[in-house]
Image (cartoon, rainbow, N blue to C red):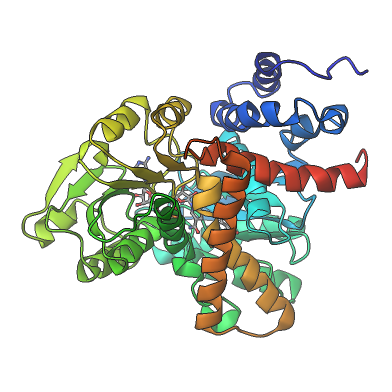
Length: 451
Ligand SMILES: NC(=O)C1=CN([C@@H]2O[C@H](COP(=O)(O)OP(=O)(O)OC[C@H]3O[C@@H](n4cnc5c(N)ncnc54)[C@H](O)[C@@H]3O)[C@@H](O)[C@H]2O)C=CC1
Ligand SMILES: O=C(O)CCC(=O)C(=O)O
């Protein structure tokens, strides 16, 4: 037996921490998964012998590169870009690109690790990857963003491809940035292939990709509520973020009869006790994606709403909560406050928005709690469908895609129940998602032997 076989959980985590110094987000993500996987593999010798968890927690490769560009004042600017290719056991690497000043290798490694399990849960053949740069698109002109994206792709193009690694959007990367990057890839390679998803409909994008993450998260939430004989009608919802995921989650909550009370950005949150209606959501979408403004402006635009500076919205009493902004935005005390105020269900639209302490609070309280890798998988699922459409050189109809999204989210919910049912009516969705995602990737890795 190899020396490192069967180390206990604390020793395993200590090893991850030692091998990844200063990478707290990555260690956090691995720990959350390992806590569940350790129980699951306790009596499964093969997974130990082949060091499956240890191997998934070591990215296949990480590419780091200089991104040099010229701003509108002709200053030369230098940023750092990365692509983390975590695991391609079940399909080409797949996962978004994030442009935000907080991007580090640790953040991208945690995101690529999570993506590996999430993509497996969708049932589609996609491995896990993530990329990005410490570039802040806020306050930049369209031309500056274009020059940055072109420079980023000038390096990235040699590491990606329709059957190799297919990036998409994430924080700070939406339709505009995908367009600039796809155009540059096409120019350099002289190939029109499905190398990115989230593309515009004119050039190979899929219907409902834009809406899919937020809508999918609400479908997952509705599936959880259904296990208690409930639905979203009349339920109040607290949502963080005001970008792609948050606005589409809000839209679907409203469509299903709920009332959305909050949205936020990194400066604070707005509270609208009258409810954030579809018209108001449309205003937020335009404000964020066209005028590129701040959520604080909502309070000046709509009577009765207030802006609370420097705070997150978790203290506002609600029936359901959807953290849809960024990692570690919902901490232990926030979780305790939500539980105390009677929140019944939390669905993570963002990736790892709840810290480990918060996760434990929700688990201990036994409320319905869906981790991001399950709840926000609708986006990458429709990206997978975009890849299929690109391969066929066809565009599927909206009704078909809507149905597929509903089916995929229901399938993920069922997988979580299958592996997370703790008896007595309690489903540990974190455990269910971790085990179901792990098992698929692990079994593919076993089939390949030691590679
Ligand atoms: N776009 C997609 O399809 C998917 C996104 N996600 C995750 O959802 C989350 C949001 O992504 P998108 O909506 O796509 O990005 P986005 O760029 O459209 O919006 C991000 C939102 O988060 C807010 N934000 C960023 N940093 C913040 C901070 N430190 N504190 C508070 N608010 C902050 C921004 O102001 C903005 O409202 C991220 O965690 C992302 O990884 C997950 C699955 C798919
Ligand atoms: O659609 C994709 O490939 C990216 C989605 C993503 O980045 C995520 O699920 O976090």
